[in-house]
Length: 529
Image (cartoon, rainbow, N blue to C red):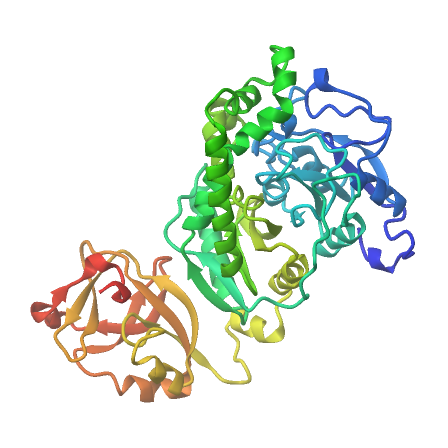
């Protein structure tokens, strides 16, 4: 699609072809949900399809999916595995596999998917697309085969964010016949005040694990240079919510929707799909455990909402990918890996948009996902536009060109000059601005020098050592010399090797000082000393 907003406002999607995931009803066309024996022929469109058709869009037909929308890999269908649009030996992502590939290969201008655990985002990332997952309930789910009815969302895949947002404007709004739809109050379309990045070391996976990690590190650096405050957060609350989706009672909601069919049609469900569905059967989740989980998710939801006020959470959409052979040989573990960064979203009542962020390797797209509180789609769109089209100021930061003709130098600090410590003011007095949190290469020791007040001494080791947390600031070059002159021995300015192998100027310590100092390397950061 291109410049759709210039078309007739009464039919803003006039003549635009779109595809429909085959768990969403298209009148007089069978809905199979990836299971021929389950098929039925609806007499009416799903609400979202009806709204798109009324806006002039032309439905082309149905697309393949992981059966009953249970999977994130695109290989769980009796109709065949959906191949990645760019590298056929790799997975396409699921469960909305066919919808993403139809758009990526140009068969449709946009496509509808669904998203309960990441199915509207993972396929977008693996095929180089935009994947818009609106706020829970913003698009009606009447006419959608339920996976987990209280969490299901209809989503859109497109090449351009503006196109996905136009589909959103057409599709959103409550449906009086849908008890799960609701009116979502849109928040103001302004840039976030903060970008939240996950702290800690998270494993990447699959045959391109190292390339994915390198692509993510580049994304972190880009985020730090967009002119918006960056904060590193503890990801634990999001990880806990993600674990609840399949380890908690919500898996029983899937069984409530589809268990009767599975029981009365033995042998027709895709084997790995039935295994997942049956994990929600029996008495594993009694009533008390359901309410315990609901109350815990309520607390996590409140915590996430406070954290995300005026902020976006930026994560890799996926931490890697797999070949279709690898998934076939180990279907549960590989599928679980694909949801590490996505499963929390609907349980915490967040909206999200997956956007391309370069390539991990040739023809292996890398993508990030932006998350916001319910109703924050316009803020996400604003930030995604900044990501794709940085302002002149941000472009200067990204390219290293002078900003307002002032040349700056990155400075790494690891002690009292960090934010919140006594010498932070010294940084600001010399025109420095915080950029991001970082870690050194795993070749350093941190010492507590016997001074008043105590100061850290960072010393590089020939053998051994650990990664030490520090901060990167940008300081005007014309003030750097005066700043360096203030630094007392045994400290000084030298080159510090970062975790990604690059070097920056920063605080180092002469080796002789370690003889009378306390080794506090195990703390990992001066903040922990």
